[in-house]
Length: 412
Image (cartoon, rainbow, N blue to C red; front, top):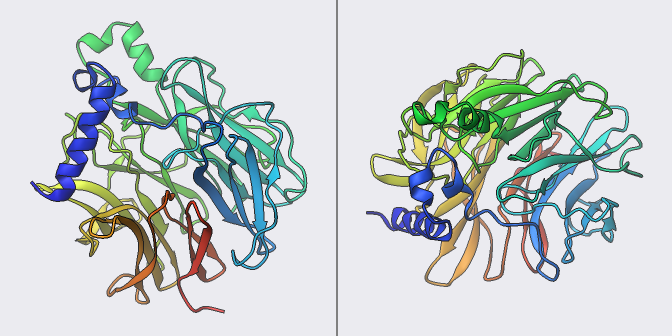
């Protein structure tokens, strides 16, 4: 057994120990959510943030301060300096802000800015997706509102948001209404509902109103982030950890179009059979030559690794799959601009007891790579996130000491 796999199994065992009977309830998802961080507690900084460049070139963050209050912060010089944080009024709500379930921020046309977060509800593992909207470029925000129409006391969590090239706002989240329905109708006893489901909706007016809740697919993993990517046609695609029968936690791909639940395209072929969620979502970005670049974590033939691969326009695996050049890699992200491709990840260095930030950079669409060391810390730190502004690529890494922004390519 590899060191990485042993570490993963230890974490999953700890999660099971926190929730009695968790391993026996793989269909319910309790094992998966046992290790999910609650809403930020006063006095404990929540380092997980959302980030995006505005149309004017400012870099924005959305996150929680040490008292659990939602803030935005701006940088006019690509992260070299930051304006003071500005608190937003969310009427005392306590958002989630852990590594895979953080506040998000997205900029749309005509001055639209939206910030989303998950608000935990009164029962364990339940929540609802909340959003604030600005129509003046972020100068002011309205009060928070619930994005989805379903109001059951169930899981609506781990949302991702993005505007497509046509100005449509897409919100995609993990939802357990079909699992609860399966239990209520007695179907769970004969054909257990695997995991949760992926739901989504759309707004064509910058978040002022939303269409119906649309089921994208049944049987998703319960606690991994959902990756969104632009499509060549200007639409949106999603990649998520899926539960393929009987219980293989590979990744599903779908285009966000139409209102029918889809059989997802199988985008990874690790065939990892595990009865819990690894809290380790994928990354997705369009490739200049067509299709997509993707990164994900999985167990393949006994080897646990973060891997990089290409997907075709329908989301199907294409060509060879490569493990990242770091056996300790975790929580990778991927982004591209033309032929430039960047993959970043965290890596725990046991010899120095530090977390290292590393990048794998390509100037030829992933045919060759160079490994680059970006930073290291012995303090608490967030998962790295990637950003694009024009043709320039950036990595953002928030540590207990500082918010670091690294330039990854040399475009003007």
